Image 1: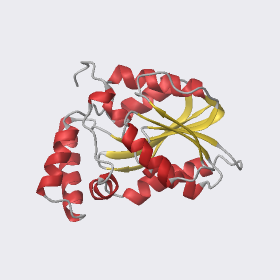
Image 2: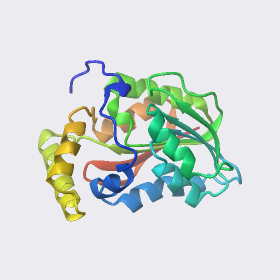
Image 3: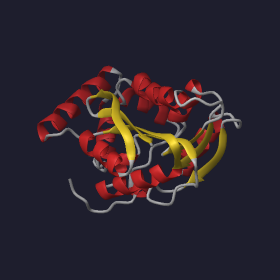
Image 4: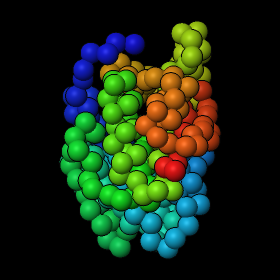
Length: 229
């Protein structure tokens, strides 16, 4: 995988008006994956956990977190202002305490947070960028806090990566994705910097998380997590 630097803000921008419906067609096991993130946050306990949502988009992950932990206080963080505006409009003001328009390579809002969550955003960073972000996330968490990432991952070998790609298209087509939508998705995914799951778990351990684990996986889509000791 190339390590040439790429800015998160240079990746193709989704249309907030169509994003949600497309995401449901293009992400297999959507409810299981997003719901798992919310469930992990809820299991932290507490009545008003503080959660930083990296790459919050239109708020799809935030909605899953609120459904599982209704008292959550969210800080939404995303590089696209129109997406963030839609997220703020659809979420209750009692749940959203702040929103920041910024790139994932920039400084994170000061913690401590009970949890940092993300969905399908961090793969836009190159591998050194991912490792750096994991270290910064660890610093932003309170002791015992959780980082959970719903991510698109590469296979441990090129043949498996190709199988994941074929599975992904098959699931998307079955969910109603047409030729135009799938070709647009391929164009966006050409900018992705996916890394193998095992590498990302190792980077979490290297950043100080213990334990780390993959909670759910369906081909190229995985939910993995690490806890700050």
